Image (tube, rainbow, N blue to C red; front, top):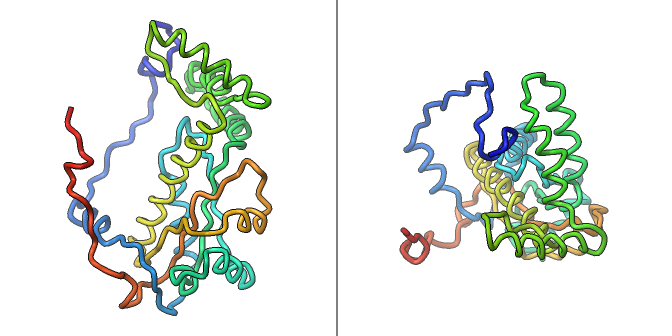
Length: 256
């Protein structure tokens, strides 16, 4: 085993972060009270509250801490009205007080990787293996090369060597990178919706939208993708259309 294997070796460090006590019942209540609300009241959302909720969203888990997300908060009346229209004028959008566009980026990992390296190098206690991970392993894992050629070569290489040893199989294509970015962004979206509920607001994640028009409105590059638009507001009495329904849990939970 390599002495610099950050994935397998436990590094020596002085950081201690005890787990805080959490009220389990309150957390369960938070989870169960989050509903996709489709009608909101006219009550305004405090901008300071929404800003804090978005910042809490950024604390979601993110692969290699590369943070391949962006959140666009439509503050101007003009942009709000455009977004409502681009969200098919559905009630969850038209009655909302605020709209957040959640964007997945497959093209920002290099910039973020460099910023992480700069941050790590400022700390003398950072293990060399951590810096090496971002300098060597991250570029190899996430680079796809022009026209995806490097990704294709990686796929062949990993398929061959994977016969003999355990290896990570993805991402080795632009499609894999899209899945990677959307997974991370969706985790942050869930953080955002739970934070909003904790602050006394409600939300609705919307995939029914004209993503092309939204991208044009936000002037996003080709490789940026809309993950979802989240509407925000105070729940109206008729805001939830029915009782929560889920299929039987044993359809989805498998014990092996």
